[in-house]
Length: 150
Image (cartoon, rainbow, N blue to C red; front, side, top):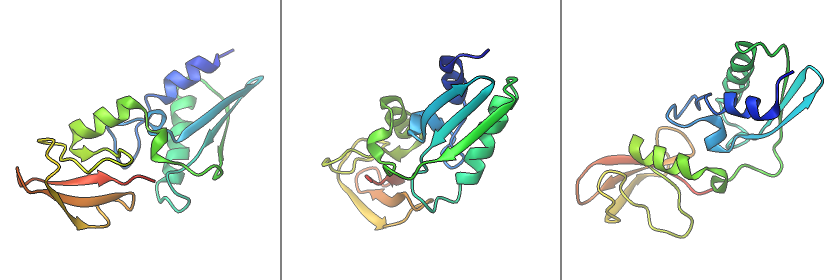
């Protein structure tokens, strides 16, 4: 019988399909793991209710667990409480920054992930995905995505 801690460890290796440098666990999408006999139930909360990657996330979770011998898996969506950027792990913030995405910091100005300057301008409310906005640093002139606070 597999332990809950082992399931969490395996899920921590499943990358987010839109930002592959962070895991679904780092992103805070995986909310709960429940074991009942041979069955594993994973509760997820998508970053927003219309997230186009939700089905892929569910399939990636199932595949990751099946590859490790877990037979019965239920992935359940929970939309309440809604996902928030506060659920991002501290590791996710650092991984986002290194990947070139400005991580969300509530109440703080947007900072360039390349040079840390706050001398930036918003180019578009929407970046490469709806949960990010496009910015440009006015010091190093690099464009970057900023993960919006939600």
